Length: 577
Image (cartoon, rainbow, N blue to C red; front, side, top):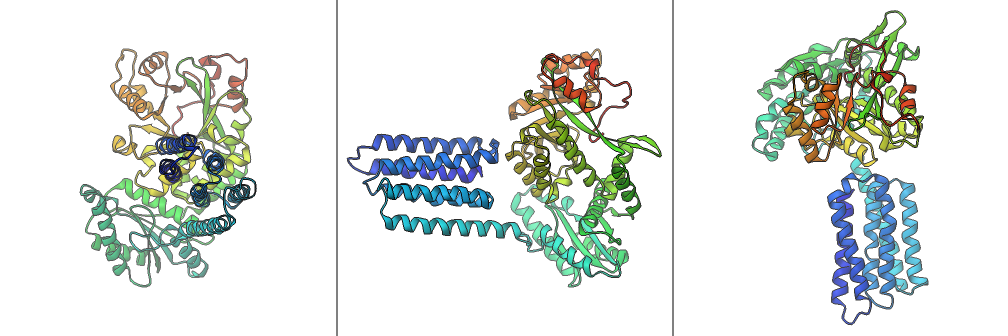
């Protein structure tokens, strides 16, 4: 949106600027030059800073743009140059229909039409033939742009390899599951990342060439009865009939073609599964295979019983959300909280997150749980005092960002709760986020355009952190608790913390230190420029009412550490814990 808006403004400003200089003896030249200069400066500003704007800001900018064009046409009435300004209106229609829904486009299209009629009837700035032509041209530009955008969104073929993409695979899966009566359908996910890494040294063209060659070889080896798709950036999917033995044989043939380490995860269709459940299981298996390394193969076990147990626990109200305060480093005042899921089983009592989260991930229940936590946290934060700036931080799995419906779920949670997008922070653990995943990064960028902020959790503990950071659309870095814990009573220097905070300042990011447990740690972190703290020194995870009370007017500018501590809480919070 920022790139296209910038091009439109620069084009309009250049046209106006050239027109003003080329038209001889024009009384309104100075005013036209001012308007054109404003458009040029706006184009440069949007090119530099537009990515930080919200979607609403771009939509509202349409109307000042129409105002600029109206001024140009009004000043040039009686001159043929008024047509030059009017000819820029199709740029507005193109931008609108590239990004906005039909209702928004209809409002702005009506504004364009009104402007043309006013220019014709009231100002006599445009001949009727020009007005009629522009109305038709705008309609064509709007229709074609909208159709192309819709077609691109619905495309089911990966342009690089010619294979079905994720959307195409999902359609095939739904069709296959509807007709698979013998339950012998197996989904295999393969990660070609280890093969691509050496080619990365030779540039993007070499990487793309490797993926095309690999896709062609695997397509020939898989045969006509097997569906091969490009599921992610380096992830391929194979849909095999014949059960696990047939899938294993196919997998070995594909590995022979690849000639290198290819981790893989498989999942067999179970009665009652939909395509999303099957994919979740295969993803969990692939994650285990990646952790094992080499050409490991992980077959996902039937975890339907575990998933059913989790579903029953959620329905019974055994899951809850606790809120750990986040405070400003400067004065200790509460600035928000992180939402952390808790499970108190009626049969087993409290169960630590480190025990139930891995099981939830393996059986695919984690997505249901994450969405429930998101909705709950948004509703809670929306009830906090509105006059005090605050935020709610919610964890999200890097794998979840690859799901095509995640963006819509976040938007729905905000709409349902009434929480402003600017008050939501989505926290992504660096080690689970594939910085090469086009789908995940695009979702993060789209969420940021709404005003949602992105935090990178456990920064510095993942792989290739510095080389990956420039590709991650982030606003906040969370300093991992392991670096904070290293600040013992006698430690005054913290070179890693200094490096992270310095890097964050250079990139324009805020920093939040996790696991702050004593005053000495807070003092050292504050000295190195850390912006916010989170840890037992300022409160353990507890009831949301305690956060609301700390945010209430008159509660005091600084949070007293013990006031939010909970003797009943135990264990530091980690990730979803």
